[in-house]
Length: 227
Length: 206
Image 1 (cartoon, chains in turn red, blue):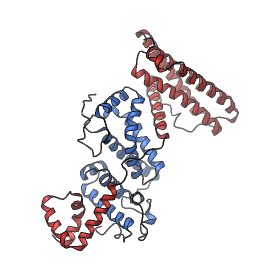
Image 2 (cartoon, helix red, strand yellow):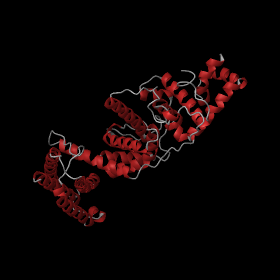
Image 3 (cartoon, one colour):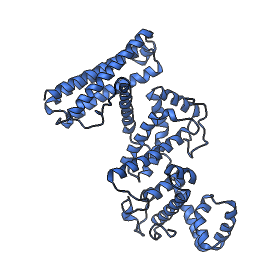
Image 4 (cartoon, chains in turn brown, orange):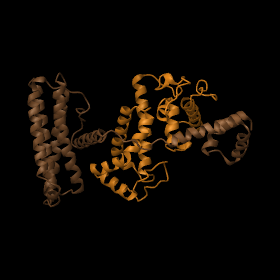
């Protein structure tokens, strides 16, 4: 093999990916060729430095929160799909709220947050594990109720989506934060319910969270209509 | 879907070194049933390695890398049912990351209505420095400065440990193209790390 041919093989030679047949002639050439020998040493230094790069880098702390929120959004959307055909684009689109509604939304969001935290404080893990078991009739009723809430939430979100004009960014942020809080509560309750599907207390918590979300959405749409 | 106890290492280069197969399988089963807390356990176990890959595929741009990693885990949640257990979960996530990066790149190109050639270095990060023969960089910076095609091949092969054939299949190119990009990447890195002269327009062999 010529020098030029062998230079094309040095990458595979260094990484050990050269066939056995070719390896011998290349090694013989490298042993006597200063250019190729230097090339091999240089490649080995590059590969050594590549192997020293950290295999793991800590992602930003907020990444999981963003993922969790997105999952919740999709889960809610998917559940709504089972009862209606249109997909709400509310979460994905910019939407605005009027400045006049800001104070009302702030009060409302605080109320909902407080209600949510209060509900959590009364439902410790210990009480959940000892909760009464839901009957099949209760579960069936909850399924109907859940579909109804999801349908209402989707319709209201669509309505808000259509009214995306001229609300103050801080109001939007406040409303989104409130919805996110409720959605996280829904997600938590759903996750717990996945582990304990007939836990009556969890069903009640989830039902309360759905009501809070629909109530907030309804009030929001009423406010945007009034501006 | 059948999920037998075969979260093996047979496919893909780098399962997480601490991946507990039984625990991982249990988390996957629970996550499939809608348990987001179980999915968070998987995230905590694998996000560091996926993020490292994303940072390098995104030329060191942490913001874009974070977006990519989030996309990867959201897709993983959606596609958990498709994880057959014939490779390590970490390898499955790595593959998903590469595919997502490629999909995003195609989407970006469509949006900009401009094809950024794998060979076009003029519009890529680090391009302005590529001809600075006397300016040495650290390794991360040098990798980030590579043209996209060369960087992708280098990260997947020399950093992550994929084989030529695996990379070719993932990128939808020939093994020869992968080898050429690797050759180019290593020569550019050598020039940028050691301050030697870069080899022509894309390397001496092109």
